[in-house]
Length: 206
Image (cartoon, rainbow, N blue to C red; front, side, top):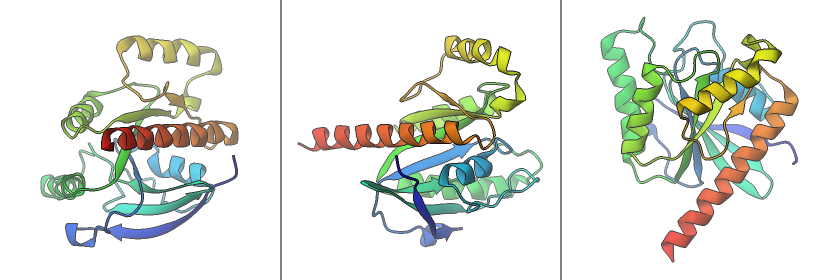
């Protein structure tokens, strides 16, 4: 698979700044400090998403236009959630923006739910899962920070998380920082899931 071409299409801080639906949208979301910006940069092969040492730095919805050859879509970067140091009013405004986004008639194909491999789904992750289920948004699970667990223990950790119950369009991916081979597998999985969701939408429309 050829490398993806990408660009920042727009940034939305409020409902009025959300772009009109145009391409299929793949939504990336996860708890604050899960490594979302780092993963997006590795996936797109460029420093396009701002990485900060301070959790919860993303306070807008960022739309990245992705050209994957035959497949074109928006990678939609949603603000991280569950960062306790933020004020209540600020967290409410973030969630209001996210609900405004999901409440529109958009072309959301599925969500990529990033989960810290060391801990598995925590309370805030389960809360998000229930919330996405309410919107009937399918999920592809990607574990981050796999490099924080020794190679000899990763398989056991992966199997333990699967036994605990993980709902994912494809078997969950494990990523370790910016490993190129893992990113290539993830790109292939993202496109596979995208094509399948588009196919299902076309079948339902017939």
